[in-house]
Image (cartoon, rainbow, N blue to C red; front, side):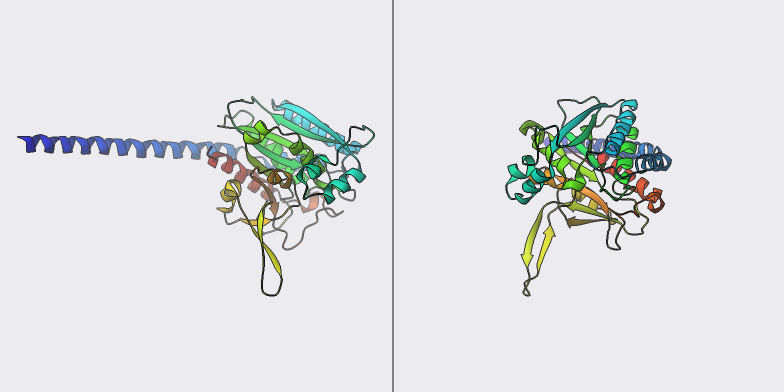
Length: 331
């Protein structure tokens, strides 16, 4: 009698276990289907025409930090973001070439590097970081999507970095009515061409709580010149080693954000400090910059950086990958 009862109990447990496993499998399947539908919906909304129009509108003249052209582009981006329903803030700062150069020399001193360039004297060079968010939820963590909008004095900057601005504005448009499990903050830096002075200022103003609440940073910088090559994922951390001949190499140290990109064969990891991800990485925030592979050379910071070299397919490719990455981030 006991044996029969035991057998029935075992069978009942097996049935319950099978039902549970089937339910888990079904839930996982439904979750994947929902995620795929979400990705498909977002990707189908990508407009290359929008992005090309943005680059054309902002890349008619050089837009150095402190110039009226720089301010004009900032106002243009601000109007577009407000029309999308975003709340915007212009984070203004002042610096001089002398104070900036001195702070750059002190990179080993973190506070001097982040804070030393800036002055309260409004007669200095005027920079503005444009910040945009929608429905910020204090209970959620925040991911930053960023790009710089200034150029050097000899370039209209269609690719460097009109391409990054176009990708961010298009991403902002597509996400404007979407809910994510985290806040997305869009930051448009001025002064990348002046040793990242805009992102250095932004990082210098982050509170400890804001730093702890930050998931990480995805920075987009120079991605759309015509080329068959892929993209670099630049990180600011690396391990230096020396071979027998005395040659030094740096092995990049990725983070969870870079891992999401380098799962795709179009992206390769490299340790570089020459974009706006670097000040964030200095304070321990996971940060990357997406830059197109420069093995063949590109026209950045030159008079050749015009609309003629832009490939709209690369713009949509980077936008598509970023949208997918956002759905893959687990917090």
